[in-house]
Length: 182
Image (tube, rainbow, N blue to C red):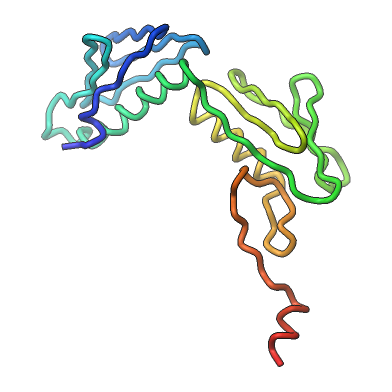
């Protein structure tokens, strides 16, 4: 039995959940989202809670029970609170700015890097901290990872784009190794 799958999901105020066969649609303050449940899993709604249950415990798709519950819980949290990831720029001359809806990054390349977010994603820049927010957890994380991959932090000076609070393992370098090798 799935520990995660057994837990009911609370529906907070201002959120409407509609279950139509294998489809779960959630509408809230931050927008609307939907999710198609896997074949071996079904959803039930009662008394302000949504519960995800397996149809048959012998079915191989029974293994997707916990995943389906987590996805529906993320939909509900996304349309009520939303999700946010923050990235920071570290390096001399590294800058980020918004031009309309596009994010423009100056990262020491011969050209500025322009990034256009997908629908449902909002990007804001304040003092070299890039905030990515939206109602879809996967889309927010994917967007943050794409922006970070433009210039990942390098291990010698730590320059690049990193998540706020991320620890970058630093390497000694040739000069420090030569002094320590005597």
